[in-house]
Image (cartoon, rainbow, N blue to C red):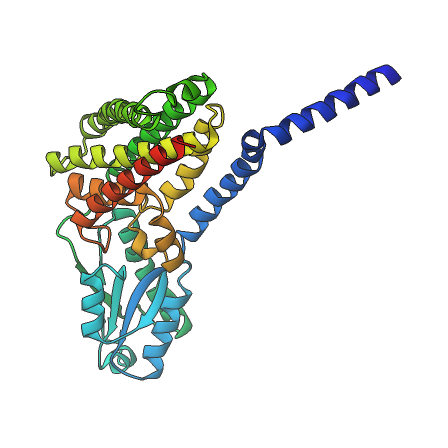
Length: 363
C-alpha cells in the first residue's frame, strides 16, 4: 500500500511539473470552463428588454399608468423617453427596436370607454425579436386594464413595421452561421499549419534559408485560407440550397467568405506562431470563437444588446462577417457601420496579422 501511494505521489509531482512546463495545455483547463460560463451569460445578457423609444404626448395619470404597464411587461421593453422626431431617427439608424407613442387625448379616450390608438413602430429586421415586442404590447394592455379595472380593453396598437418583409429566425441564424464556418475553418487551419513547423522541427531549418521562415509561413497560410474558403463555400451552399435561404447578393456572399476566411486564417496563424504546438490550437480557437460569435449579431443585430457587448463584438472577425452575410443573403443592414468598412476592417486585420506572423517567425 505504501509503495502504491509513493508511486502515485511521484507520478502526481511529475505530471504537475509537466503541466507547468506546458502552460498552453494547462491554461486550456481554465479557459474552456470560463468560456462555458461566458456562453451562458451571453444568452442571458442578450435576452434583456428591447430598447424602445417612448413618446409621451400628454402628462396624465392614465398615460403614466400605461407607461408603467409597458415597463412591467416581463422582459419586454427598455423604455427611453424622447420626442417623435428623435424616435423616428433612431429607428431609421437601427438604434432602437421599437417606438411607442401615446397620443394626446389618451386619458380622455380611456376614461370615456372609447378605443385609444397607440402608435407602435417596430424594426422587424429579425422576426424573433420583432415578435417578442409585438406579443409584449397586448400583455402590457392587459396589465393596464386589470390595474384600472376597465370593463374592456380600450387600447389598440397602430402597428407599423420598418421593413416590408420579416426575416425568419432560422433564416437569419443560417446566414450568420456562414460567418461562423468561415472564422472557425480559417483560424484552425491557419493555426495548425504554422504551429506544425515548430512541432516538426522544420522551423529551425527554414530560418537558415536565404528567404527565411516568414515567406514560407505566409505561403502556408495562403494555402490554408484557400482550403478554408472552399470548406466555407460548401457551408454556404448548404445554407442556400438546404435551408432555402436566398442569396440576394451572391458576389457579395462570395467576397464576404473570402475576406472573413483570410482574416481568420491570419489570426489563427498568429496564434500558432505564439503557441508553437498543434494540440491546443483547436480547443483554444473554438473556445474563443463561440462566445464572440454569439456576441457578434448572430442571433439578432448586436446594436440592440447594449454598449459593452456591442464594442466587445468588434474584437472578432465574426462581427464583420455576420454583417456582410446578413446583407448578402437578406439585404439587411445589421451594423451601424457601412458595408464597405466591414470589408476594410477584415482586410486590415488580415494584413496586420500576416505581418506579425512574419516578424515573430524571425525570433
